[in-house]
Image 1 (tube, rainbow, N blue to C red):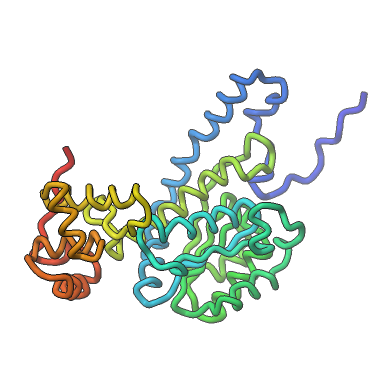
Image 2: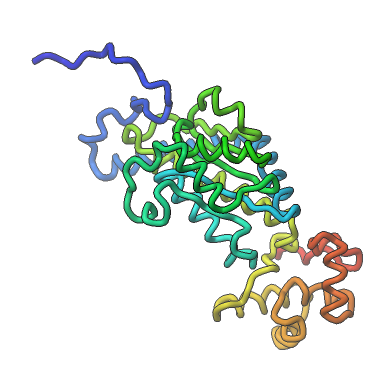
Length: 312
């Protein structure tokens, strides 16, 4: 039997390399498969942490965009695109933010969320067109997401963003081509290594991407005042669970009992952040809103408001 040639040129993208630690995984038992996948996943957090400085710059860019009336716009294809859409869609219910502050664009449009749209990721024109369709501007922060760093759709979007003066970021899991780095203000290069199954970037690369996007969006929301300490204070009580959470957070932050917290929330129009400031200022809703505006929306920057209670 003749073995296949080993002289084939190696793909420069790390995400396309074979993983020597899982070369015989097709003969592994279910428990061995679980152990090997877990061992690879354990490498992801450290890889993300290695990009702490770049992540901090991305949080700064996201905050600046939101404070300027712009948006954070994610652009990706396949798994990368789906993760961007997911992160963007979770911001409004989590932080009480307006829809449209975070936007997720995926090659092939909404149908690609459920079914792969073959060839859509190969079109740089598609990425540029999708950005223009939502009127990208110099107030926005556009984050391309491409595990391989080479997705044409993402490159096209980043070039279009840079053309209008928007700040740009790129999340990838292998060193990207130098040609695209020329239009990227914040490269976030998380080297997660070869996948358990060669090229399956829905695994380690996908996990790393989710961690990166969580950090950017959560960091930006914290910076614009969506938390008081680590309490979520800008949520919108749109269901029974969130009504209960609103009351519990208000009670914990103010020291009031549940009944008094409920009455305070009612006077505050159901807004937890406003209720907390009203309590500590002994003020009405309008005065609380004015104080928050002067503090840039951050409760801790309202002089009369003390630090949150210590964690038990």
